[in-house]
Length: 235
Image (cartoon, rainbow, N blue to C red; front, side, top):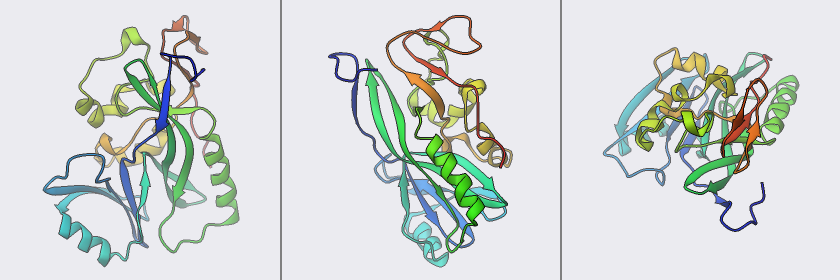
């Protein structure tokens, strides 16, 4: 894709969407204050060391006090939460912290530039876990894309027209499961009744104006994307 051609593509840094706080007993995800109008009550997602998760809501002051009580450190700003990855019985929250925003006509997607695996505070990862994580994080820098505004897993003719606010809450179920790389990282959390809005499907492939052919497909994908139907291998 040639971002220099007039009228084809524009790119710029992308805004953060979430804040992740790491404590010894809990990982807490909440909306980044720049991502949406400040609500009276703040929603948050808490994930324990055992993988048990729950959603909650509190006032700004109440949530801040919870974070103080947990002795949570400074938050990590991120653009997308990909799910909970378990490596050698150690839990990490996989997130995107840097991405390039790409615009094609009136559509907007992001190319992952850097991902991070957030551990629980005070945890020292084993060498095996660090090596495995390094491979996952390197892989995510190899042509992975996501969008908060539309479903990039489907060709234009089959793309469901929904409001951005609706897609925000149902982005995983709206996506084609064959091309969602991180679906397995969200399964255990969604199975506990956690809402989809916290997670963003990420796909590997290419996204641009040209027609592409996808492995296992019988026709080109018109002005959208081609993705590999694969996900993270069990570790």
